[in-house]
Image 1: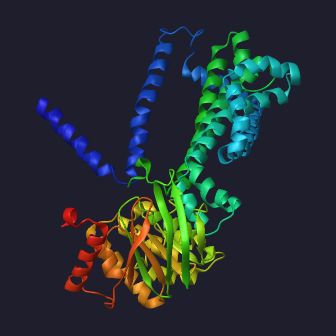
Image 2: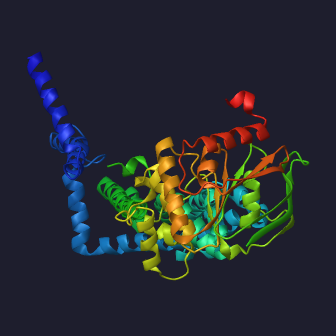
Image 3: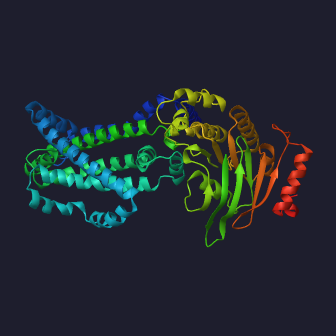
Length: 279
Length: 234
């Protein structure tokens, strides 16, 4: 028995070595990574069907899917998805754009840093949800206050990473540009920006994550559409399937958008001499 | 073609840097600058290249006419070998880039990123990048001090072959006496802190030289004597 399992272990290790090269590895990762979630869902479904879990607290996965499907049939789901996505993207782009402009100036010009950085650091220490009542007071509960809140959430991680990235650029590389008589603008465009790209990409990935967090907050505070609104509807109508359904959709959308940024990151950082780029 | 008149640049309340250095360089000459650390060798190159503007004195060299190579390759990691070589060029001049890559023996590596290059190959790329603007003077700041002994000799040969082909004027800062003896027509010895020009030695032997030439060995003894290192170095 023991010998058999040892042999099996060896086989697994052998397979590991073989699959370590190229394509099969990603299949293997997918397979290994899905073992736990898939078995959990099966267990959950079985437990629900046997009545171990009470349906009014935690409905079966099939019931959740069914209620989502119902919304698809009624045509209401797309509206909710659409408004949430629009809010996140609008907030993400505004926040990122502002962070790039301010972050570049602060990172590159000492005087702007001394002028602007203290107040930004002070604003950063305010928990962002504390802005909600003020934004609603100023801008009403329409789209503007929601998008503003999300932009604020996205701004800080992008800004911090942008500034850190620019600060961290090797002075020795900048000297190479100076030897060729580059202007300040050329040095920024050809050396500083590409050199700070890795840090910037890290920033927008965590910015997007915060964007998803803030859209929930914004939509719970008051909305007539969106996945966050569905959460509230589910709470008020005692339908856990709606709540879990929208949580599920948040997870899927968050993962998909992050994956999209990750692909961009990998594509544009192929030159990096990092652990991730080992062949 | 290059004359340097009483150039001074000091740091830390005149405890480091260099003072009153004057010399002139003929076209096609390879000048070695030797000295113990802290005597201002690298500072001299930084002044001549335009990186350090806080100097006094004069020299006749325009910024556009300078190519510079550092101790480290200083390649842009996000650019390929080919793009790195073309870094200082204005516009697209593929032909000259490829000719230089061929000269430094890197044909076939155009599309590689710096992370995939060995130390010697990186320095070859850096040589090509320094030469791509066809500078009148090539400034070399301890260019081979970070590579192993064999790579170092190969790179020295490469530098000589480039000199033969293009008759490039070079200023080579080094702390390797053998390197200076092998490559240079004249050797300037800086001494002290801040450094002053202590001695200028002319080496008449034609290049390429024999690394084991006894005449060079006697010049080496002279250099060691000037540097006051005889007791510790032999």
